[in-house]
Length: 91
Image (cartoon, rainbow, N blue to C red; front, side, top):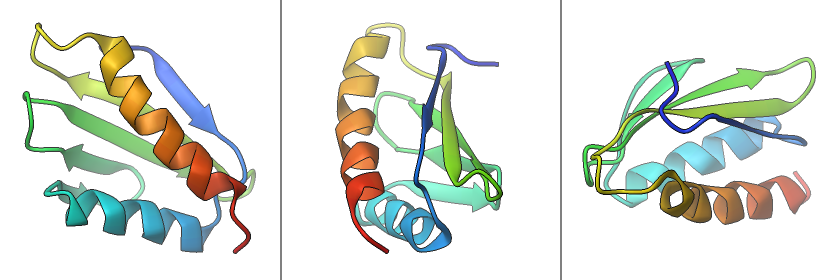
């Protein structure tokens, strides 16, 4: 169940999924599973779930847990630019 709605990003191919996961891990996140991925960013009890639709090259992300003091807008203001930047890059 989402705590902050769902954001969907287009033009997400397998190499871009790998890049997103690598950037999350480089920033200290713990990742479990594989499509859907369960991500613990290890900050403010924020946990995400990412689901990739390979056929449509889209990625949907929801916030499954968060500390009540962290507003959803702050979470999305971090995630959106990162994913949108990666989605705009060529493979």
